[in-house]
Amino acid sequence: MTRSVLFVCLGNICRSPTAEAVFRTLADGRGLRIDSAGTSGWHDGGRSDPRASAEARARGYDMSAIRSRKVTLADFDDFDLIIAMDFENLADLRAIQPEGSKAQVELFLPYAPELKRDEVPDPYYEDNFPAVFDMIEAASRALLDGL
Image 1 (spheres, rainbow, N blue to C red):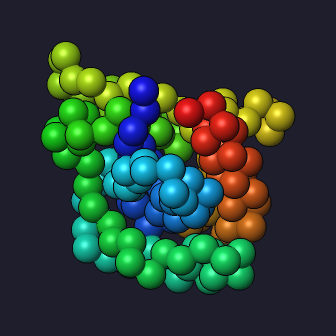
Image 2: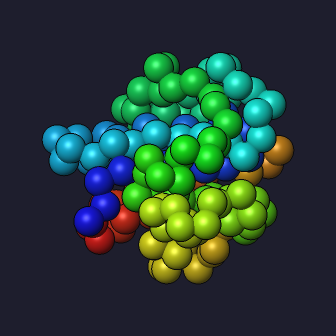
Image 3: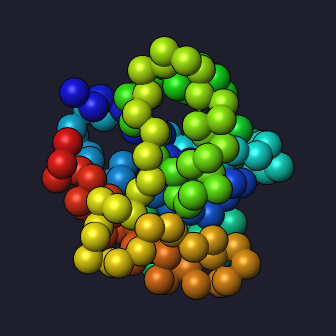
């Protein structure tokens, strides 16, 4: 049974904190542990990208308490499900996953096959925050329904 979910992107300032905020709001009251992290430590301790935070506020999500952090080896035993935003982060996670760890590591968007995409694009470079939020909301609803 899944009791904890960790969302992972590269820097933990756009996609994964967005997924954390959306999923936490949708899962309110279900007793799930929800967090986010990045495969890099570039932004450790920093706040979410201001464009992501603005889009979140406009949609009723609060990202103000989320701080960037890097994935740790302990995460693979602390979380039941680790969700990567794209193939590169999925490969990076699988490369560092300790043998015998309990976490299931997988991509996020296959939960929403109607999107006909495998990866959540990085809005940091493409500045497509509304579209990324739409994808994350769809996949979050489907993931929650499946738990």
